[in-house]
Length: 231
Image (tube, rainbow, N blue to C red; front, side, top):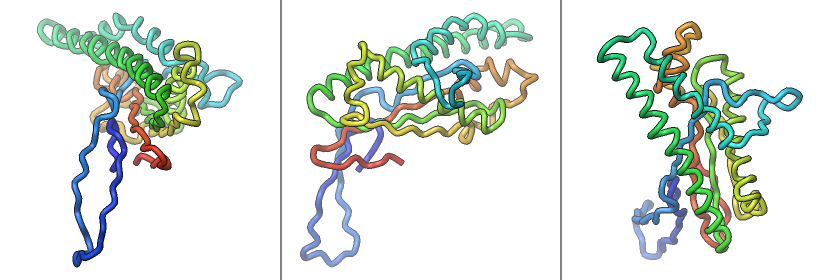
């Protein structure tokens, strides 16, 4: 049995004496690391394509991307409030500020906690599989957004490689395996604007901002067991 955020487990069922073709058995999952799946957010159309490199390559790690995004908090709030007055303006201002404070910032700190937990588990002989899904808002064309999702995933891989001066790097591809799953804009909500002329809705709104993300999930691989792909 597999569920993101919980240990993968299996059990054997004896069919001796069974007359039914299907036998059900309850399996009780043990939580893996608290906070999974973990969602992390990105600035609009970031990170940019690196000149001279493949379209999916990215030299930045997530902290660098996050710091640049966080520095634009004031711009995002001001643009989202544009054209509004009175109570509507206050509600919009609060909504945008809360997104930065409660979702963007907390996500970064949760990534640091996850990294520390991963390192501890790997140092103690655990085998772990993570999957990283990359998403984009519907602004721009589908091909561009697919490559953008791949670069967003790469910032997370770069983070793990750089964490504590490479403490996790020796485990990557061995005890720590990572699946890259770039969805691009394919699952973007139909309620999110793709109108480049309406940047308040398509760029600066929290609804559009939530589409620009990666989601990290994973599970602990049981001892003496091959890793099972997450679906």
